Structures are given as structure tokens and as C-alpha cells.
View (cartoon, rainbow over the protein chains, first blue to last red):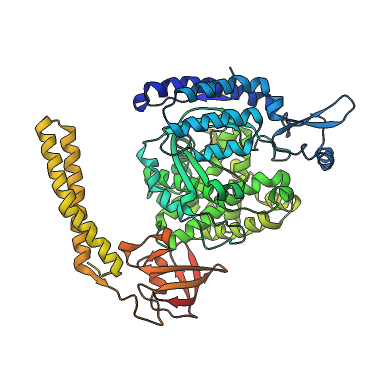
Length: 454
Length: 154
């Protein structure tokens, strides 16, 4: 059994007989995607995992890419032949034998589902995986109507497993169904999200009509592949703005994962670390609502702020910059929502504290899943920037936050990171991150952190 | 109750919503309650409890709308003014960029459509200002400077 596959307990009462059959079929597909991902990251101690030959240097790969652009294509495996020549094999050829049973399972599920939209998705996805048509794969995923009770993401999505170039996509499997959890009711957020187009950053902010932003709030049935190591709070695709303009963008929020990472980890840490006079004025439900709001702000920002040539300039720093940018620009946008009366001051304070406390909650996630560092680095930047500017005071056992200064820090950092994303190089971004990613806070609170067993 | 502001369109919508609740929703919920009682009595009847809760929500909404109808002042959107008032479309510069929105009463506020409540922090700060003015929109957490570039009326 692969370690990259995880099943969740879920309430089966809303599932039809066909749905339950489909669940069992697609779970099998998830296990196979877990196995496939394991091949992709066979040697996960290497920054390039198994996407590139073990002995290939970054410079050598860049040089080879000048002659053969397939080398640095997101959907190829790079190999070296006996003469030392680097060549690229498309995923759908390299993993054809692994994908064959997955496709059969998808087609079997397609024959059972009574939902036309989900059926069309399963059929298109089967075809796209066989032929390596990843544009169609993403479009098919976005097009699934929210009326479909079951929902699936399957295929190469996300480049976090490639620490060398932040480029190669890894196989992923997120199988979910429409949530009925009231805390996560999408109607609480959709209108707010659609107003997440703030009056700043017009050079990068894309004019996507609100009706093209689709939001699903789902409970997870099973996850496999890349996300099994790091259960995502949410996801959004496509990444390409031209495709977003054509088919729209979709955000899927994963309730169980937010509950696990923010509800079960972040909340107790918030109660314990934040000054008592501050933390006791926030109820758990209120914090969770704003945890979801921060997730949404992050995802919408990620989808709608696009910078030309970002990856070519930032390369290995791309994912770090992008994740910090999404959270911090999302928070800046929340400030505009506050002055326009969309959210309250208390909401914004909660959002700031949640961002702060992720420095500690994801520290525990990192103990088991190093790839969370893509996000955690940005949380530490915010934390250290706040310390430097007196926005938080580290007391003996607790943290005293000043929300007004924290927002000022978020505003300044947002401007820095927007500029970084728009114009700076990998080396410049690295210099900035090196300055603000000290792990001092983990030593300062080491006794307290040691008392937690998550 | 403080005075609320409505455009003519907002007043029309408010009256329509009130009429719907009084003439359609209220009789319907009375019927639904009767049906629930007929099928399960008064005791340990979940459906009956649900319908009662719905009735309370409808009655509360009717009361809110009636309060609004009593206390609202309808604004004349055609009346020209050099100053920002409820009903003004305001073009502003904020954070180095241009934004525009219409100031409306809280009932009509819909930030997605750029309809901003006169009771929001930005609404409160810019009411009464004129083109060229710079105001600070200040909450305990967020402080933003808005420069009024232009004021328009429908």
C-alpha cells in the first residue's frame, strides 16, 4: 500500500447506490495515482525528486533546455542516455502502463454516474490522460457543474514536489463531495470572494468577471498522490490566465483539511500563544469562518493576479513568492473589504492572527511533510516582518499582537511581494526571503512547542 | 431608529419584498404549519418545529422591512450636487489607483456591484466631501487615504 493515499471517514447518508459504487471504483484509481506519484518522487531527498536524472545539475538542465524545450516542460520526465545526452519523455508515455488501469476505472465510473456533467468530466479526463492533453484536463475539471454531488481532481497538478525548478507537475487525486457543514457554507463567502478584486495591483490583476469564479465547498472522501502528503486546504485551477478568461476559474475548499489544520492544530495554538486578553475575545466558530475567508482570499488572489515571465525570473523561488503573495495580497484586499463594509474589523483581526499562527501550526505539519515549506516560509516572513516592525511583541510565554501594525506590515509586505513577483530575479527574491525566514520563533517557544503532539 | 436612505429603485425592491412576504410567504407558512400539525401533532414533531422557526424568521424580516419603510428617506438621484451624498457615484484615487463606486443606503449595499453603504467606513468618511478633497478612511486597523477625483449623479 502506498503512503501517498489517504481515506477519510464520511457520512454516506446522502449517497445513492450508484454513488457508493463509484466511490469504491474511484478509490482504487486514487491508490494507483498514489503509486504513480511515489515513482515521481522516488528519491524525495533530492530537490529534483525523480523528475530529472540524479546527476543532472540545474545549469546543465537549463543548457539542455535551450536545444530541447521539452526538457523544462512541466509534463515530461528528463532522462540521460548511455552517451550522457539528456532527453525528455512525456508523462503519458513514461507512465502509460500505470495510467491504463486508472483510465479503465474512470471509464467504469463514467458508465455508472447519473450526473451528466460528472460523466462528461470522467470521459474527457480519461481521454486527456491517455493523450497527455493537459489543457483539456484542466478545462474539464473547471467545467464540472457545482450541481454534481461527486467531484474529482485527477492528473498532474501542482509543481511543489519539484524543489529544483518549481516546474514539473506531480500526479494528484482529490476525491470529494458537496459539503453540508454550515461553518463552511459557500454562500457565506462567495459574494465576499467575488468582491476580492481590490482597487490595487491593476498591472497584475486580471479582469475576470465574478460569474466566472466558481466555488465548491467539499468534504474529502480520499486523497492520493501529491496532496496525500500535505492535505490542501483548498485548490484552484487553471493557472493560465488565458484559460481562466475562456473557461473561468474554480476554487475547491476541502473542509476536512481546514478542520484538521486550522481547527485541530491552529486553534489550540492560538489559545495558548496569543495574549489572553486578546485571544479570549474570539470564539472558535468566528475564527474558523475567518480561516476559511483567508483560504478564499488566498485562492482568489492566486487565480487572478498574474505576472508575465514570473517563473522564468524566479525559478526555484517561484512557489515561495507565489504563496506568500497570495496570502499577503489577499489580506491587503481584506483591508479594502473592511472599509467598504464587507467584513468587520474583528474579522480582519482574526484573519491577521490566523496568518500569524500558521507559522506554528504548519511547523508541526513540516515535521512529517517537508513540502509544506513552500507555504511555511511565507508565514515566517510575515511573522518576522511583524516582529521587526513592532507589530507583535514576543513575551515570555505568549505573543502580544497589535492588529493595526500587523495590517500595516501586511500592506507593506504585499507591495514588496507584488513588486518581487512582477520584476525581480530569483537571486533578489532569495536575498529578501533569507533576511526574513529566521526560525528564531521555534527556539524561543521550544518548550511550549514540545508539549504538543499533533 | 436612525434614518436610512433608499433610491427609488431600492424603495421599489423593498416594497416588492415586503409584499411577497406578507401576501405569499406568510399564508404559505401558515399552511405548512397546519400540514405539519395534521401529520404529526404538536409534540415531538420535528417538522412542526422547523416550520415554526421559518415563520419566526419571516415575521422578523417583515418587521425589519416595515421599520425600514417607515424610517427611510428616498433620495433624488437626479439632483445635482458638488458634494458626495447618498446616491453619488464617486471616482476616487486610493493606494495609487483609481476606483469608483456608488454610495447607497445600507439596504441596497452590494459591494460586488460597487454599491457601498453610507454606513461603511469609506461611506461615512467621504459623505459631504467634494472633488479634490483628500480624506483619511480610518478604522482601528486600516487607514487609507482617498482622493475624490469626480462626483457624478445618474
